[in-house]
Length: 147
Image (tube, rainbow, N blue to C red):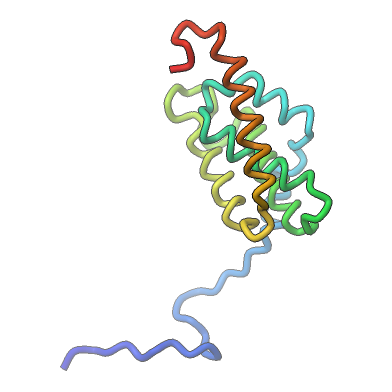
């Protein structure tokens, strides 16, 4: 007779270890790396290397952070992710062509998911416009024309 799993009941403890991670506390190592000027410098210097997806995701989070309506806990998560983005030496060094910003994108995506309920259409729009401005400036003198 095959084993049948019983339905999970809300009051039961789920199988396996339960780990309670406080995102605001989990990011403290990278939070100290964040400053708005460092963030802007990183975007300016490495936009083409990082790519449009990384830049736009980072900018959405930046605008979430600057929004006075964003709760402190969500801001702490964003600061941790942007701090990781700024760090020059992280899990995969940013200067490695093709993969250097992969871990940064992962950190940004996790923060994005954790604060999704606080992301507003205006954050997406401002990030999109800023990304276009950055890449239009960067690609004008670039030999590949931004391709």
